[in-house]
Image (cartoon, rainbow, N blue to C red; front, side):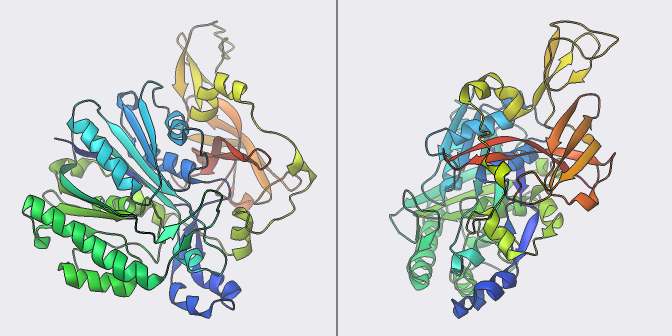
Length: 485
C-alpha cells in the first residue's frame, strides 16, 4: 500500500506582528486593518524556497536511510532559478544519491498536491520507491497590499513509500481550470490578485465543493467519515460558509494557521496536513484539499505506524521556536524592497564559479567530509591525508556526512565591517562531535546569546546573492540549538 511514511515541516524562526506592518503602511490602505491580526512567518535574509525545502526535508528524513530515497519532487511558485533544476539543489543538500529522479513542480499553488499525487502514483506503479515531496514558498506582496499582510513563509515535506506507512493513500479526485485569482508574469516580483469577491464566491465557494463532491461520489464517501478536513482559504467568513455548506464539524476543521504563519501558497495544504498528522490517531481518515487553477482532493487513513514516528520538529516544533522580528523596515531590506547601503565590501565579486562548484559539489551543497577508515577520524573539508597526528594514513577515506551532526562553538566573533543584511556578521569555528572542525557563518541568532561550547546544528542557507548575474549561491551555516536531541 502506498502512503505517507514520514513527514517534516519548517517555519522560519522570525515572526512579524501584522499590526507593525499596518502601523507603517495602513495610511495607504486603511481597509487592510481586517488583515492585521496575528503574526506572519518571515524567512530570514539568507532563506528562500530552496533552503526551507531542505530544512523540511531534513526533518522528514530523520532516522531514515537516505540512500533508499529514489525520487525528489520540489513544488514551489517562488523557485530561485528558471533554468537550473531547483530540485537538483535540494537533492544535493539533503545528501541524496545522484542516481535518483528529481523534478520541479510549479505554475500554480496546488503544485504541492500535484507533486504528492505524482509520487504516490509512482510508488503504486512499483517504478519508484521512497519519493520525498518538498513544497515551499516565500511569496512577496507589495507594501500596503493585502498580500503583504496575508502571506507567510513555510515548507513541508512528505516521504512517500509502501513500507511502514503511517497514512495510507486511499484515493483522489482532481479538477483543472484556468481560474485566475493570483498571478505573476515572467519578470514580476510581487503577487497580484483579482477581486476578493471573485476569489471567494467563484473560486473557493464553487471549486472546493465541486472537487469534494467528485471525490465522495467516486468512492462513496460522506463528510462525517473524516476526522480531519484540510483545505486552504484565508477568508474567515468564506471558511465558515464552506464549513456549513460541506457539513464540516468544528472538531474536524483543520486550522489554516493564518494568525500564526500566514497563507503560504504552494505548501499551504501540506503544512496543514503535517500539522494534522502530528495529532492524528490510528484509524483517522483525513481529507486533503488544495486550491489553485482547480483543486486536488486526496484522502488518507492513518495507521498504527504513526505512533512511533513523531520524533521530529514538524510544524508544532517550529511554531514553538520563534523570535519576534520587531522591525518592519528590516523585513523590507531583507526582501530587497527597500535598498540599503551595505558598504564597499558588499561590492566584491565573490560568486562561485560553476566548474569549481561541480568539483566540490558534495562538500559545498551536501556538507560531505571524509572519515579515515583506519583510525575513524572525521575531517572537514575532505582530506587525502588523515589529520590525526597519530595516524597520517593516505588515500584511505570514506565519505562522511556532517550536515546532520551536532557541533559546538569553539570560537566566534561579531564583525560590524563585513557586509551583512543583519549586522553584525557573526562567524566562527565549529567543532563537531566525533571530530571535524570548520569555520561557518552563524544565522538565526544574536551575538549576545552566544557562548563557546554552545551546541549548534547545520542549516542550509544562501551564502550570497549575485544581483549582476541574478543568481544565488548556497552553503551551510551554524544555528544555535536550545538542546541536543
